[in-house]
Image 1: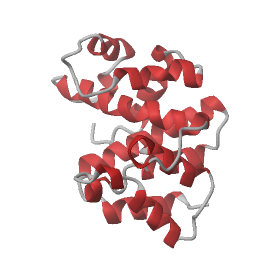
Image 2: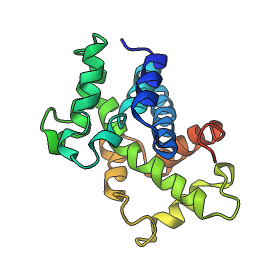
Image 3: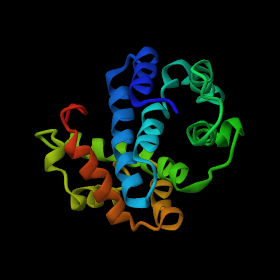
Amino acid sequence: MITRNQALDLLHAHTQNQNLRRHMYAVGFAMRALAEKLGGDPDQWEILGLLHDADWEETKDSPDEHTKHTLSWLHELGETEGPIVHALKSHNGKRTHLAELEGAMEWALETVDELTGFIVAVALVRPEKKLDLVTVESVQKKWKQKAFAAAVAREQIAQCEEKLGIPVDEFIQITLSSMQVHHEELGL
């Protein structure tokens, strides 16, 4: 299996935008926390979070290619099958049709990907712009404001209840706490 350091090397080699890097770090931290909650492999889940958008800078104008570049890079490292490969295939599955979502790891990525960005948006509208001052209640308050971070697919996040058996409030808490622990790496 690819190591965390190899994943970071790939991410850094192909992603120059600091905010996009921080997004992938946040998803990685949240995925690790979710793996611990759901009995998954924390290292594997974090690596998936780190890599899920590694090719976005190269594919943002061709969304049907998103994840295909990352899969190619993994192939060059000898990673041609397994849970991370399948999860990357399913990550953009609606466009690439490479794989359907399966299992807790893939559904965790599907639901937490949007939530990390939403939490960052909540932090950024605060005068202090600090994650440690964000609460589950402040996230919930903004959640109800449809104009706030309108591009965030709240229904995608809310699937955590059905697909993972985690109530939305608890899902927010797990994700927020994982990000707060690593606030320095996330620049917030």
